Length: 258
Ligand SMILES: [Zn+2]
Image 1 (cartoon, helix red, strand yellow):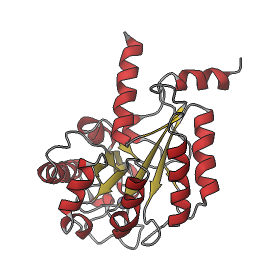
Image 2 (spheres, rainbow, N blue to C red; image 1 turned 45 degrees about the vertical axis):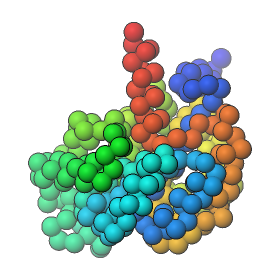
Image 3 (tube, rainbow, N blue to C red; image 1 turned 60 degrees about the vertical axis):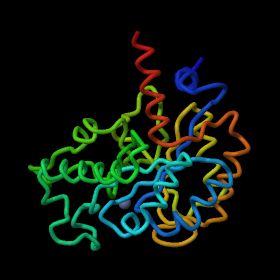
């Protein structure tokens, strides 16, 4: 048996029931099309999603009851900071909100403020994951650059970053999960990414921004094609929120140690 076969067997042993792999559908930035298109489609196919909201933005502040109701139906409302600090190399980053100028204390305070905002609005949601704005896992630059992954590790069971490969449940870094940017993908591309991961027993985390509109978007029909496939295949592909899959992996890892 090859190393790849053995790796797949180990990976598949992590999944509940007869599932051969896992999928999480994550959505960044509380875009209008999340409320208008993505969540209605997810609800129609009875699939949960993970929505990373910057709590300083209007996509959160003007729609808190909507997000509370979405959480009550099984969607995860995750932390995406308050003001979405990113590298100043992006033109949309305003002066002072660039991670190059952040201290670790300031970054941690902002993350904790967003957590407090979400907890206050959705007290029934006891645990949720973090999403690194712009996938950035550091503050500072050059000689003063520092990783913020330890901050996320202290406060969350999982952090979602970016990276093209699906996650191996035994080996992946839960505090910086890889997620593929699926903008512009067709149904065939979306399904084949999920299915190739399932072949290897892995966990695909999709990163979406706009759905059928807004920024960095995926076509809504292409997206619906993926949902239809996942709903049809739910006996062999476990689709759940980032936090639920991460917690399940943590339990399995703990069991393997004992
Ligand atoms: Zn974002």
